[in-house]
Image (cartoon, rainbow, N blue to C red; front, side, top):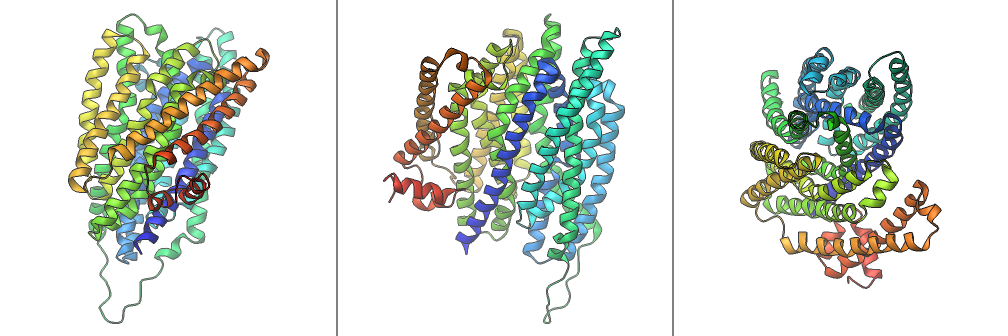
Length: 557
């Protein structure tokens, strides 16, 4: 029974992880023509607007999927179907009120926020992005509801659908509004108008994608989602169960929601705070004219950073319901097993992603973001790559602590990490003015939270990972992979015609070869070092296929 539940958790995690990867790839691919249209400076406005949007999104809906998932899974485990229905009603009321409030803050306060961030033209982007905050509030409830039932498929499909619509509408509207901004510039307006209008066009796609995803979820819910909670179980022995009062349901929702909300707020507020501190200190030091451009470069790095982070976010969403149920039954063995599997799989993905970014930063930049600032971006990617590992692990460990009922721990740890991060960033900017200081501080924040979370998990759950097996061996295999992939890249540059290696298409082909060869070498080296047992490997996403591959290589019995 336990093995079946663990397998279901991994399968559902695989679905979300796969959907997350697809979404990140779509997000990365559509950002390429988008950045070509609006430029690095336009991407600076786009990135700043999204940082502010994410903060308001956290308050309105970001924590709703996690909170609703926990509430629904707890009540379904006890067959308390009426309590689930009441929780949904309370959650929809909360989303209506808080979503409207966050929309008003972003829409009517756009100019004040833009002035506060020292970027006056940012207001155009904030206004177009504001309605999405309200839409996402409702979307968060429905995603959390289905995740709480153990069904991750609607979330995965809706995410892909959302990204496809987002990509198409963003590119079309960015092109139209950038052209409109150019006419305003020709009429005597500021040069910044075309970049701000282009970025604003890009954000319209975000709202369109969210709206389509919401309509999809409403259709799925009304077609069959209500069947899960439509009938109470027959019970002829005991008296009918008395449902929770709406007051009790509201209290349960807020007690579950608020710690996750505050933890998410603190954990994600660092980007907005970084933007503000960076803009103010750089302006004070006399570098004010370069802040939008440099922040655009940081935004390009974040596009790459977010792809492996999708794995951690997906695993976090899938681990929470099953971990909550196991903790509620006091099944310590199952909790430890889920904890170990979640962390191990996250590391198995994050570490080679980090090493690959370091070794292949040059061709990645040449293919994705060819520009006159590519030298800075290459350094930013290499310097920021280790943040992929610490932030991925801190994300999955946040979910583990929430799943075992330690809801306040991620909040406390994120607050401590944020405080240390801010102090470090301020000191670094005065010593080393520029975007590199932001990158270093970004890594430090993830590292602080990661260390604190690991300490708490070891205390409440037991030692969830073995450092040599979980960290050192994947790192060693990744370094072999990185060196080999870089060697293949340099060899291809030497033997292929210069005309091919100098254009975007040729660089893309070389990247495909390097990444494909690197992946094979990584798996071979990893299997050779045997960091996972046969049972552990088979329980991971695509683990059965990896196990069969390892057997064919003669590396596992």
